[in-house]
Length: 392
Image 1 (cartoon, rainbow, N blue to C red):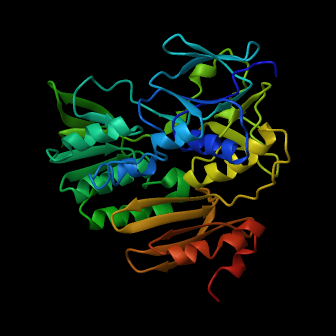
Image 2: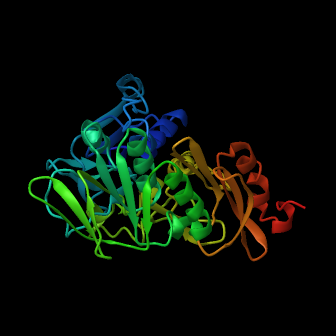
C-alpha cells in the first residue's frame, strides 16, 4: 500500500460517481481521482434515448462541479485510460499521463457494438454518450424516415422518441420479436404491438444486408430483398463491456471484469463496479447486471470492502425500466427468454406477466403497471412458488 495515489476510479458514469460519493460518505480522507474519456462531468445515461433526444432535458449531470470541489475529488476528464500495470499500480491515460493508485476501481461501463460493414455516411448513429444523443437530436427535426437496427431497449426507446417527434420509423430485428433475447417472444410481441399501435413499422425475423447513399444514408437493404428509404439509421445492436484497455494487465475478463461477491478482481487492489463488472452472486454464479439500480447496491458493498471494513451482504432483486411512448415497461427479478411466461393482465396496451422457472416465480414484467410490479419484490426475493402470485 506504499503508493500515494489514493483511490483512482476509471469511468465517467453513474458507477464512478456513486463510488466516489460513497467513499467520502464513508469518511475516506485520502485522494480520489476520477478518470473519464469524456469531457462532460459524470452524467446519467437512461435519459439519452428519451428526454435528451426529444429536447425535453439538457442537463443530465449527476452532481455539479461544486460537489467534486467540495469533496476534494480530482476530475481527469477528456482522456481515458489506455492501459493498466497492476505490478507498478499505475494507469496510463490516452494523453500519455501515468497515474499511481493505492486502490483502483474499474467503472468503464459498456461500448456499443457496431456493424463494421456499414459505409462511412452521415446520418448513421449509435447512442451511448451524451454527445451521440445530442448529434442525433440535432438532426431529429429534419428526419423524415428513420430505420432502427436492433429492437433491444435502446432501439425501442429511440424508435419511440423519433416517432413521437414525427418521423416515420421502421425497426429491423433479426429475432422473432423485440426484446426476445431478454424477455422472450411472448412479451416481445406485446412490445411490438405497442409500437405498431403508434405507427412504427416493426419488422422481425429479418436482418440488414447493407446501407447505401452518396454522402448521406439514403436506403437500407434488408436480407429479404426489401429496400427501405431512410435519411437516418440508428444502430442499436447491443453493447459489450469496455475492457479492451485491460489487455495484458492480468485482470481476469470473461464477459466483463470477473469479481468476487464484494467487487474484488483477480488483481490485488483492483475492483470493478457497474455494467462492466461480473460479480459473483450468493449462489456462486458470475452475473453481470446492466441496470441503473444495481449500481447503488454495489457501491454500498465495494466501498467498505475496499476500506477494510465489513461489507454488507446485499440480496439484490434486479430492477430496470424502459419508457416507450406513454408506457413504462418495468422488470423485477431475473427473467430469462426461455422461462414459462404467465400473462395475467392485458388490456391491449398495458400488461402484467410473471416468469416461472422450476415452479418458482423468478421475475415480473409489467407495461404501465408500476404498483403491481413492485408488489412482487418479496415473492421474487424468496423464490416463492408461482401459485402464490397467479390469480386464483
